[in-house]
Length: 442
Image 1 (cartoon, rainbow, N blue to C red):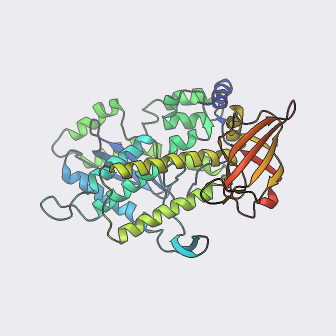
Image 2: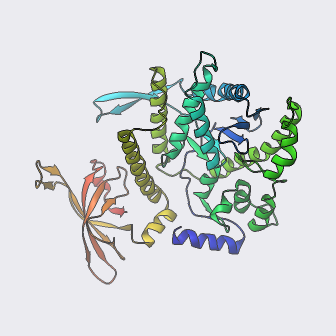
């Protein structure tokens, strides 16, 4: 936890209301997302009990499993879920757009939009990952055949679960993490994992503080858990009697499960409303473009008959994936800082970022110390306070093309002036140089 976030939590506790830790929205919120709230059977890692799912606030659809231990019932549930998820993800394949690649020498095509799934918390993401793994390898013929839509659903759920691991991706989002990215509450991080309590701090009812509203929201009778785990008292006193018979009362089971899921359904749409009130960050659209690329690539992979995702990555694939995740995390952190002054302030507080004015620029400098000469412009940035921590550090500059560089030297030029010499190594489009009057680096 950063110093500024800790201060925001203390202020939230004192004021009785969550404090903003972002001035813009750092994720894409789709105008037509698919909200999925899963429930799992207690003691079973991926045995589905129920799900409330839909792309319209007024039309949720409840799916239940009368006997989660029964294989046929589980895969009938999977087929029902596939009947909702697959048409939704396929609905974005109608229109494509051309994208220039290789510096305009070639063109590729991607879909103009992509699907977006929302679950309540990280447990929901884990459930989708496990459920996708349990369904994507199922056979569609033979003794234990399942409908063809079931393994296809598993491949899509695995695709979304993998996307959720990528920093900055908005293909699969969970409400708790999305809210925590933009507000700090006066309670602990563990308590923030309860969606109802978190929302109570952010938007408490009139006349009540966030702490008071959060205490009320923690009552499972008023705000049932957002899944996939259920409340033990509900399991023992309500669910167990209904499922203990050979032929469960489906009507009664449907009624109690709907009552458990509807409060979370409303909380999910309240979350979307709150996030839509924030203006999107300048680089959110670019990250969504990357998500559309990822979606387009997976659709093409399926159309070409590609195999399901492996159970485990090989050594090379795992190393490549780790590299992509680390690079995406670094890039996402930099983009958030450049989009949001509150996020940038945290980096400036610890000396990881600085702001200043470009006073000198050598745009034509060539570095010929290597095997071949390369363009390596240098700029001098004058900072009015303490500069970056030292030389040899990577630097990203805030500009339309986001040039990258290296800190060459840091020199004190007075009581409150620091001169920072930067060598640029990427993102040096000609359009950046005329607008180099000011620079920010991190």
